[in-house]
Image (cartoon, rainbow, N blue to C red):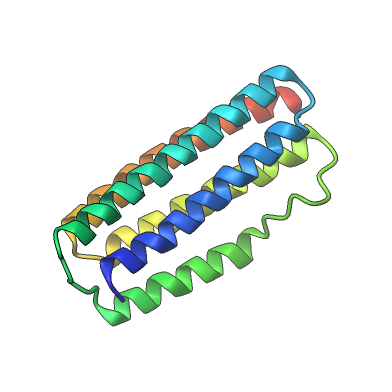
Length: 152
């Protein structure tokens, strides 16, 4: 698997989060909660853009490096396990509290994924990106936890 293939995995994950936050914004019970979910969607969209720029850099530079196949296998297993474990189903959401729980678990899942991916790759560009994504996802989680307390 190439570096760009791994970046595609991260892009798919960020796109899923982006769509989840847009859906949550549409289901929000108050304007302030809706605005925060729209802000979070915007943050995820920024991640997508950053990942696409990094992918473009590797493609333009002709960098054909591949990532150790065992590391890639482990990262992909982590992605599948995180998606299964998170169980991020927004189809039967009835209130803001449920939306917040789903969103918080999505952020936790992304944090776990990006931390593990950080340790599985030796490419410095990807390590820096995964480290930045962890920090941003942690900020998102903190924002959601702050919203959750008043709703509880």
